[in-house]
Amino acid sequence: MKRVLNISCLRTSLCFLFCWAGISFVPALHAQIPDRVFKTDYRIDPGKKGELSVEIDNLSFFKDNEYTGSFTKGYTLPGLWLQAKAVYYPLEILKLEAGVHLQRFWGANRYPNMAYQDIARWKGAQHQKGFHALPWFRAHVALSDHVDIVLGDLYGAANHNLIEPLYSPELNLIADPEMGLQLLYNSRRFDLDAWVNWESFIFKNDVHQEAFTFGLSTRFKFNDPDSRFHFYAPLQALAQHRGGEIDTIRTNSVQTLMNGSVGVGGVWNTGHKIFKRVNVELDVAGYYQQAGTLWTFDNGSGVYARASADIYDFRVKTSYWKCHQFISMFGSPFYGAVSTFKEGLTFDNPSQLYLGLEYSRELAKGFSLGIDLDIYEHLPVVFRGTDQNGYKSFAQTSFSAGIYLRVNPSFLIKKF
Image (cartoon, rainbow, N blue to C red; front, side):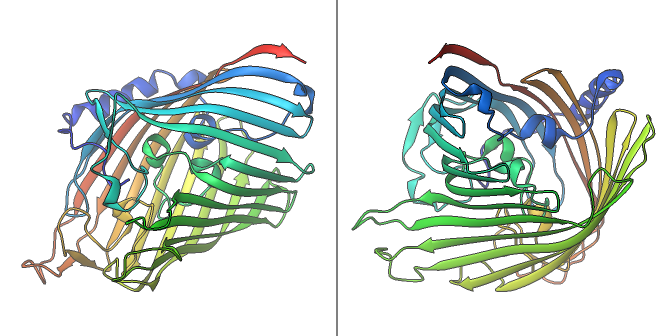
């Protein structure tokens, strides 16, 4: 989804309000918002065989983006998504879920009937009232202690562990659930997540395109993750295809876009009660437009260096990014060389520095709270492709802040 709302941004002081609110929780907090708030535990419990339950899964959020520069405009996201579903375990290794997924933004009552994640605009004129609503169904089978297969709604978003230049954390708030097929493998030395997200299905004589995304996220673990010094290598890839064999759009019909990254990282588990952990990672990212002319550049690359430290009960993060003609399908526009709100504007080798602070607190099983503050320093860059061609910008600072509440209770109805 390119932009959900064009709401006027709140005053800068709102971000600092979130920051101070987070500090007040420090004594009881644990770091890592993606793990505690955004991710979904996919493990099947064999002890639940025969159980039928009702589950509510909700993420409420308020995120304010105070953006400057020419990469993208600022906006605010006040709202929630809600899943209400029946969950049944017919077998020790099989879980079935059925229900509805609802998206709501405060102050809105009319929603485009489209996939909320970078999909063609052809359905933008069709609307839903009250909520953006989708059916929900998931069939999950655990073939072994290491292998899981998922059909229907996938364990997506933060569960894929993609780096930020490939996938914006904001999509945990606003993107539709991913739907299709997923293979999960987890072992002591290797993790794999492979999936197909089918975003647009077409029938014969439809006047829009089929669209789906294939994803791969792996991690090679060179030693035990709980070791004092742990080393690993991530490999990630995304490929989106738009077209279809029965596509009726003749001109420039097929587009295939690819993003990928490969890297190496290390974790220092200090064993100290206050200074707990340090994580450093270096990734090389790539972009390739294999077919079509949807985007300005046919290929590009970027370098992403990041580090984080868990100190007491919060996480401090920093990173450096520099790219050449790189475009990200699902990442923030800050990690690309193309402006998303000034048509035709591109950037010569853009780079940025990032500093972030985050908190997360598990209130109880199934209930968690997260608060974060992100600061982006856009380094000077040369503009291309518009009447400002050759202009070199000054360094500019953007920042955002958000608060997130995940509520995921389950109520047992009957055990057969």
